[in-house]
Image (cartoon, rainbow, N blue to C red):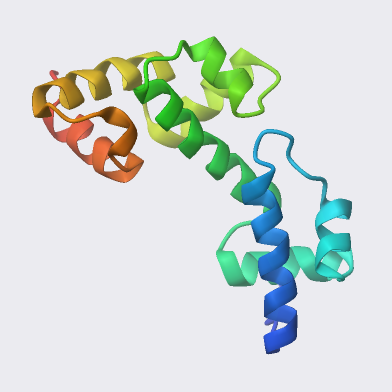
Length: 144
C-alpha cells in the first residue's frame, strides 16, 4: 500500500472546507464528486486525497455519516424508518437499514425504540440530545 501525504496551504484548506460545507448543506441530495471538486476548485483526485487526509473519510463516506446522524435525529423525533430513510436522502429502505445496522450495530427501528425509552425516562426532548450521547445511554441501559 502506498501512502500519500497531502500538505495543504491555508487557501487549499479553505477550498476544502467549502466542499465539506456543501456536503453539510446538501445532505439529502448528496452532491457528486465533480460538484464538490468544482466548489473547491480542485481536481477530483486531489479533492479525494485531501478530504481523506483532513477529515478521515472519503467524501461519500462522510456524506453517509452525515445522513445517518441526521436519520438518528429524525428517528428520535418519532418518524417511521421509511420516512427517515427518504428524508435523509437514501433511495432504498433496505440499503438504509443495512447501512444503519452495519454502522450503528442495531436496526433503525430497534435504535428508535431504545432511544425513545431512554429519552422518555430522562424526561428530555429527543431532538436536543446529541446522537453520540443517546448511543452511549442506549447501549448502557438497553435491556438484554
